[in-house]
Length: 263
Length: 263
Image (cartoon, rainbow over all chains, first blue to last red):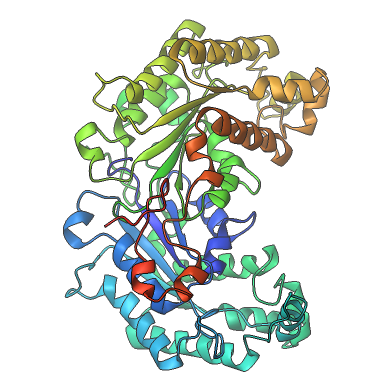
């Protein structure tokens, strides 16, 4: 693959992250605005919870020594809770204290200098799960063959969203609070979640707009140096090459933060 | 960045490739269907021609030794011609023989065992530039301040598209012939290119559908082993984890071709 030319953003999460590749999803929109600046790597795994995310993280995230010869992760979003908050006896259920501990563990994998995955360049953002439309979800599960019981509760998912915010405070990591943004956008009416959730659980394009906009604002506030508007292209605007007395030199890869040549 | 867990597809080209990240663009659609199988890395550079792509390639593509510790490129699309075919005195113009030679050079960077970038895992696909709607493009340029002359000709771009096909034959590389697909879809009426080109030059979502569909078919025919339907997830479907007597083992990363554990 490509050598140390373009760093990346990693999106770690469940189906809400995996589905970020849909048209107007947050991965698609990030890829578009970060083109030629940072690559977007999607590690969204449909159905996964934080318990399963830990061994996955331990395999996909490079250890300190290996990081030296790989593109750096400049930003990582961690977005779980939609499955952890499944109610028993769902095999996806993770008890609330374990969920919070797992999130802290994921954060500290990259932020703790004692971790073998310590990555001082990686800025972390946590994202809360969206509210659940239990009527919509319940109707969909009841219509399956055989019919299934409702597997999520509105107030339980809210507790998991609260736990994400608490982990953010404890670990000093910014939180994109999609739960609240979407809930308030409905005027706090569960039935009106159909505007943003296509099946009571997964976001539609309008739902993803909250994720993209809120994440964009969080980057601007907490990590302004990697907001896409603050970054330079690795390889310059074509007009600069065309007008350069030395096009080959103009085509030298650049530092996205300073615009200086990297040789 | 992530270690050697998920390989990738690289898209090399100009603005038509860079714009592949738009909703319904071919990069977005590939990312969606290859999720959890191969990452999609977009090296589309708006305005660039093959002359400028060569030094860019030499910087972003890893040399043989470095490839050992980086994700492998399983597929690379090379899509130029839309700018090379600009007519003189455009600084983007590349003479037709040089264009063909540059394309061959890019192909052989990865396919020739003598190349320092030789990558035996990298399958290559060439893509032709789409036809130009010179009336639409001309009107847009004339409306600029100051007005600009038409910079592309219908028949010239067709010659560059033909050259791509000739390079494909010569180098034994499959070609996605977007020029012909789109031209035939209009019934060979230049004005009707407005159905697929938003400004006479760049594809809209319907235009990208040809790129995605034709590329998908080409992969199926020429490289069926990496068609997305033939590949396994690196990390399995969640139900397999939930039902496993040993969830940790079930979460071991897998070979996308065989589905076997990779340790």
